[in-house]
Amino acid sequence: MFSRLISIIKPGDRRKERRVKVRLPAEVGGIKGRLTDLSLGGFGFYPDQEGLDVGDEVMASLMPDEFTTLDIPSRVVGTDEEGMVLCIAFMKVDADQFDPLQDIITTQTVGH
Image 1 (cartoon, one colour):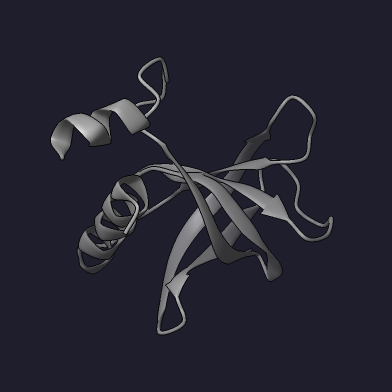
Image 2 (tube, helix red, strand yellow):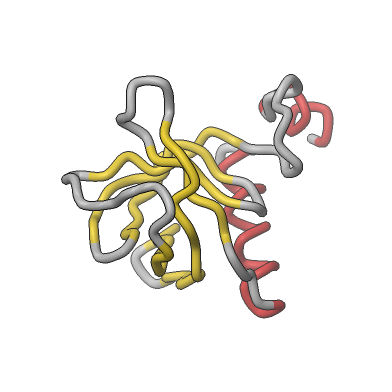
């Protein structure tokens, strides 16, 4: 299982934390959208509408299932080359959020 996990995570990624591709609903600064990738340090966010700018400090609400919402203070730190996907960095992940966040990453990676 571990070798499959490593093969799915982008090995050439220069970020501090490894990212995995995901498609999960989320809300950032009150704007709905979906995650495109996720790590312990942040995520890519495809918003349903405009309204977020680089530098904005926002609350990110990740919704891995219909019963769970993780609210994590975050900052918009950039965009992809086309400006369609926002790069969101977590500002502070509390200890009680770390394990659920890691579970989301693991579950999305192994395809459960």
